[in-house]
Image 1: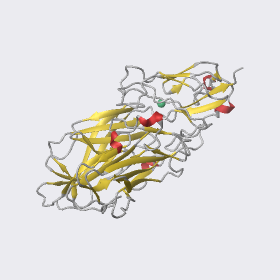
Image 2: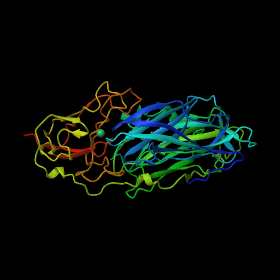
Image 3: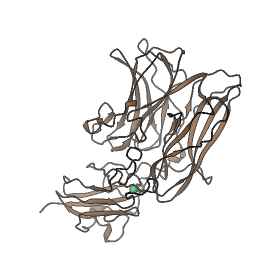
Image 4: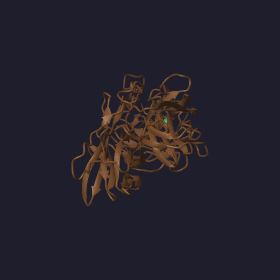
Amino acid sequence: MIPAVGYAGVQHLQYRYGPIAIEPGQNSIETGTDLPRPSVPGFITRFSPNLVYADGGGVPRVDVLHLHHGVWVVNGYPTFAAGEEKTIMQLPQGFGLRYEPSDAWVLSYMIHNLTQTPASVYLTYDVDFVPDGSGTALTPVKPLWMDVAGIKAYPVFDALKGSGRRYTFPEEAGKAQRDKVGAAATWTAPADVTLIAASGHLHPGGLWNDIDVERGGASRRIFRSEAKYFEPAGAVSWDVATTVTKPGWRVALRAGDRLELATTYDTRKASWYESMGISVLFYASGVPGADPFAQPVDWHGQLTHGHLPENDHHGGGPFGFPDARTLPDGARTAAVAIRGYVYGRGDLSASNATGRPPVVRAGRSLTFKNLDATRGMSPRRSAYHTITACRAPCSRATGIAYPLADGKVTFDSGELGYGPSGYTPAANRDTWKTPKSLKPGTYTYFCRIHPFMRGSFRVTSAR
Ligand SMILES: [Cu+2]
């Protein structure tokens, strides 16, 4: 773990927000206020977040409860952030984020329950705090939030399988995704400032976040936050840590220099829906730094922590589900209802005839309707489901690396259900139609939100 920087008078404060009740299947964005925090002015020098069960049961397994994100918004600006990679923010020696008890702190968080079992958790944050009067002089820093699809409550884009070996957003965003590019993908320095730290947040499949600086038509790489996967299957799960800048990294920007953030995903094995690319930077004034146009900058970073035990349940082992390709035809139908976390026809967990793949003729569609997230239901109590192609037979045991959106043919319904637009991942519709272009064959799929849910349908030739 990245060593803490010691100071005379530093306090190691442990805070927790909660308990937070997590509904079955929940995948909503919530807001928290009245956050515990220091009662006197000073400087924050380190911030280390986590998620724990309220009953003392430790850190939840990531394939059970998932910390999609926690963002601590200070005086209206996103300042500290945690995703499942649980990056620790450690400012280099001599720097601190100014803190006043009158600062407004709001927590925006998204905790995803991958199961039907309710839970109760705390969001924890360990803070190194140097109170005023301790005799330690620190240089104040300001946060800079860069986000390829933000700033907004749910800043996401899709990196689809088959879009080459890799997909870089925003550079390679086609027409369908241009509107997802965020204003915070770039930042123009309003004055001469020196960057002193940077981090990176990405999702499974993500390889790195690059920060380049542009001046007078020239461009230089100043940092790459790289994903180090401990996951044996490679860049496919949350068993990952990302790098932050090394302690001596200082990059001097001139007023008018433009920073650009880009995120790159591996699209060989699977599609990555609703992905993110975020970097939180800190900068200061009146601090010497290297001019990236005068000398190369060491853009490699260091990991803030190693492999985390909550990521150890990888999945992919033998399981009792059938191979739908070998099952006899199910009902000829035009509609499948999803209720109680079960696909009404073709669910791989159904042992009776309803588990057989429903049949539709080529050129026609099967319409799925989610009854677990109906209009008017609160996002917190909604169970958003997806129909997402995965490679047949898609029948193995659930874990953080299985199943994947790796079907030979790519399709995805989006998260069927409702919620305020831009503030939930909901597609704001409850139905989805299979593409009419599907060729005859048996198709297997899963729910990205509750990956134990698996199903199949069959397309027959139009005769
Ligand atoms: Cu689901």
